Length: 295
Length: 250
Image (cartoon, rainbow over all chains, first blue to last red; front, side, top):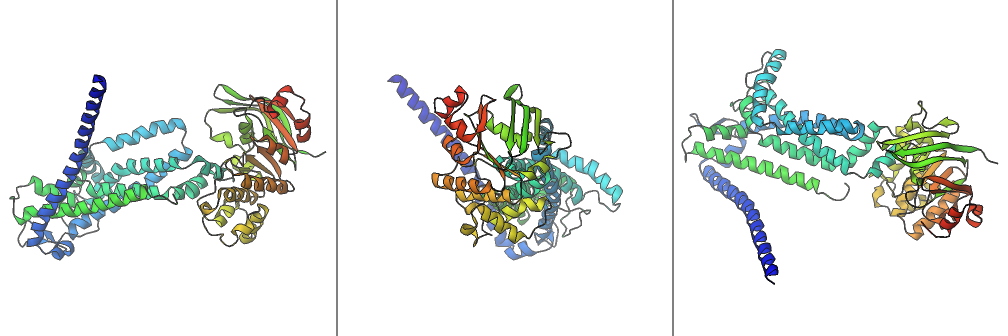
């Protein structure tokens, strides 16, 4: 009887503890949303919403002040497009190679190597971009600035490559082997099987991988702060220095911007926008991953 | 009477150290239905899948001895597995159509192999031969996954026929189907034998007796008995064959 009572009490205790852990995550997410919302509302009481979203000049710290977020958005956009156009083709090719062509031995070497890429601290990537990638770019295009978007999106592309590869590889492996066998039995080559059968059949989950990778690139901070510069400029030239939304938040948080002023509040408005962007990306990605039906 | 299309001589298949097929020799006759029976793990599927080199995907497999198709060594150094699979098609245990339209399921194989056809004609011919045409002729561009299991399996047969193979291998083609769908596939096999050589693995001895001309009985990696189906079922030469077909084990 005593033993039973004891185990029941233990069970209740564990249950309460687990619930507390779960509640904590909800409370933290909730607080972030409330904080961002509250400070953003404060910001938009001083700066019109349209001036913020569609203004093309971002100079909150200099007179005359201007709060158009488009330069920061274009900076983030440049990083995302650049890094995805590196990570997607290479990531898919590696995943296809691993699933259809590589020997078991080779696979067992490459997989951990990719995971090491994912484990490198982002600040290291930043310095790698600044001291290794930029000089190479400069030797090809002499007009390259010291801080430039290209070096940043190249390293961000390398950073998100393992994510694209491993999620795509999982997607390929999740397909029933009977599908592949059916294709091979019709005289298909490994290349035809991977491009025409495996890739289309796994396409939803591959898209999900891409969206999660985009979301990671949007949120990437350290490497872009170091390598891309702090120059909010509405440009699509990757050789110029730019500033992303995340890099701006770092600049304000680390600087001596007085608390409470509208300059300080910009940080929350930008963070709010960033939050909405990445959150919708993640929601879209999960929607694809858990999408039933044709996949 | 009829010529042989596939010949095995002392065929041995190893998974790692484990000898799954222990030196079997047989001849598959052209234009006949050969049923391969035996209890689970007797090596019958392994043998079947060696005919079109579907075992190539298993990393630690080793195959020795002779295995020839129309006189060419299937595991010979010059043989391209993709080429042998054009002549030796396969229908699998579970229906595995591609997640594409019915039409595309049929034309995909011939297309990637560079065949030239009037595609509409080919689709109709293949579906008619697979006894599926009347059921799907109005929805050729719907997804193949919308078909019932039995229809999907007949589509897989149509897809195989579209390649104009010489041999069709069937690996327990009815095991995932209900009795009605099974009966349709069995009737279909009777039709198909007019044009193709068929080798089918089955767990179901009544089925083997119904559909095949020749039967091979495998047990623990050995070929115990191979001969005319009627004789094998009514007057087996081997004690183990008799025990198996009368249901004493297996």
